[in-house]
Length: 164
Ligand SMILES: [Zn+2]
Image (cartoon, rainbow, N blue to C red; front, side):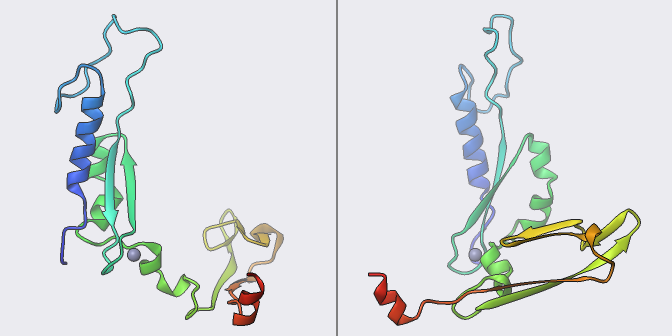
């Protein structure tokens, strides 16, 4: 890996911004409990613990920020365990075969309606929807195939000219 993708610096700098933005609190000190002199209805701004990753694909700058209520949540999170050290990739680079483009004009996905203990499901979902369709697994017999295709048509050079 060329560089460290997990942005620890931003976690800490954000924390310091949050802390220093609160009234009369020194950087690095934890929140004090509200005192009796605090005006009623005035609540402390809610703290949060952000965790930011940048896509590890060469040259890609896509990023994602997860937010946690406590530092403990952040440290023990699924994202911290699975995405740090350059293991996070954006959708474009983690599922390239699903991204429609001039090189990938069509995608296809098949799900089979399965009878499970508490009902019928396409995968883990009893209801599936997307642009132009919706389906309830319960309305259909087990074994029914749901085939979802998406196809793009690029404009021809002639129709591109007509738009101008
Ligand atoms: Zn990417």
